[in-house]
Every structure is written in structure tokens, then in C-alpha cells.
Length: 248
Image (tube, rainbow, N blue to C red; front, side):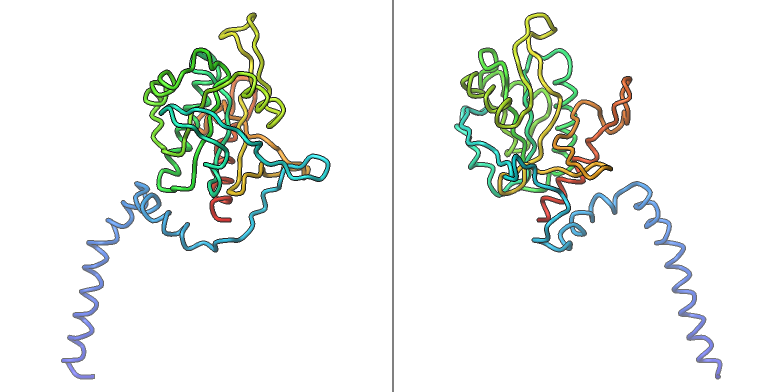
């Protein structure tokens, strides 16, 4: 091997060495700071196989898959919203009220965190139904949305006839709501979320015994992990399952 060839190999080695010194630390910094994960996770998600059914189960009654009942209410912008507006979207259901002094602020803070996770997906939404429609007018709901940082155009905070809302909660979703003057806020209701697929069916993961969990606990945050009563957070599970349904 002549000297000229040796010099060529030495030159190539020097180029590789310089590349490693300059660029590898920068790449490691991006990974440690989460930049690559944040910026490239959407492209990774886009590469996943579309149209593939997830392992999330359908919630059934007597062998019949439960679907979101028909509804029609007014949102925070004064626009009429129906269940048809959510077709083709994966979305989360909740029942709340703006003057709630206990669990609602925690529920909606968690939902805003979920919203921000899926901010780049046009087919993700949330349906929030007030159980205090006399107070929660569209104007009140609009102010509430601004206060909590609700920006997703598919997140509708809805108000309407109380009887229709309570029927939707108690009979349509079996998510308990009721008036109760003896407790703070004057209402009692579940802190659970329901997850809906693109075709309007209620879906969930199964527990360790093979039974559907049906609802996702919405009060405990991901950062808390477990509350004072030993209840574990399910927001991380909800986000994982939203991603699965978005990919169906």
C-alpha cells in the first residue's frame, strides 16, 4: 500500500473523528431534552399501520355494542352540536359544572393535558356536558374554556335542557349525576371519563382479570400517580388508548 493511500485513509478517519466530536454530543443533547421524541413522534405515529383494529374492547349490554346516544346541545360558542359532529373522531366524554369546587377543576386540568398531547390531531376531541345548565350558559362556558386553556376546536362544552343532559349521563353512559343540596357545589357526579371511537362506540381496555374497565378515572393526574386514598391515575392509560383508536 503506497503512502498516498495511507493518507487517504488517515483523512477519512479524521473526518469521522471530527463528525463524532461535533455532532454526536448535539444529538445526545436533543435526545436528553426530548426534542427528538417531541418533534419526530408524530412522524413515527404516522408510519404505524392504519386501519388495524386495536385490542380495546367494545362495551356491551346484553351482547349489543353500546353506542353514544343521539344528543343535541349548545356549545360555548352558541353553536348547536350533535353526536354527528363527532363521527370520524376519537373523543372523551365528561360531565361537569363550572362552579364545581371539588373534582371538576382536577378533571379538566387533566383533560387539558390530554388535549395538549394530541394537539396536532384534527380527529381528536372532547365532549363536556354541564350538569348545571341554568348557570352554565354559553357565555359562562366560554369564559371557563378560556380560563382552563381549552383550545381544541373539537372540544365542545355543552349546555341545554337539564332533563336531557341528566338522561344522557345516567341512562346513556351510566355516568352518575344528581342534584344534592347537602354537598359542596350542590351536585354529585362521577369523576370518570368515557372513551369513544370514530364510529361512536364506547371502548375501553380490559383489566388484569379480562374485564373491561369501561371508564377511565379522571381525577388523579399523571404526576400524582396515586392520590391520598390509594387511587391510581388512569390518564396515562387514557392517552395510550386514544392513540390506539386514532390509529384504527
